[in-house]
Length: 225
Image (tube, rainbow, N blue to C red):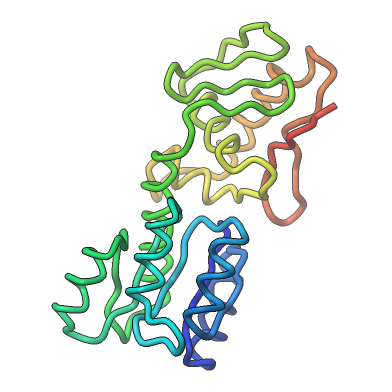
């Protein structure tokens, strides 16, 4: 997941970057509202973690400007402790969620993952990667115009990879998404389903779109030839 942290407290911003990076997130930082808005509009992010009190342009205005220009990025706003008015205004200006300071990294990560899942449901329902087509709405898959039958769980794994095409997606992330964060889920289950996908959508067509990223998980490549 690609995250932009817009926070003027440099120590906090750096701590967030280190903590989120350790969990497998790709993190950029901005220390003021203007540069945060510029980065959010010039680059692609899944979620923006946005503080309210920012120099140049406060968090409310950054949020409202992003929505005004049609941005669909997930926005989690950092509010003051017990700041009910802050929370209400954050949602009114277009934020998807908020978190009151101080907060734990565990809670922030859980909120970001939950928000990314919700935002993912707003993503395009049909993903085209070369000659591979994954239709989330119809729950169908085809390669080169040839329908590829998949089990419901195989399709769910493929759909999750397709929504994040080009990114390295960890086994734990796939488990959380496809197996509903069941603590008893075995990561080896992911390997079994990925192997099945390779046998069905790659091998018969001379492709290698489902790639292993050593130490990181799996990636669905746009060109698997």
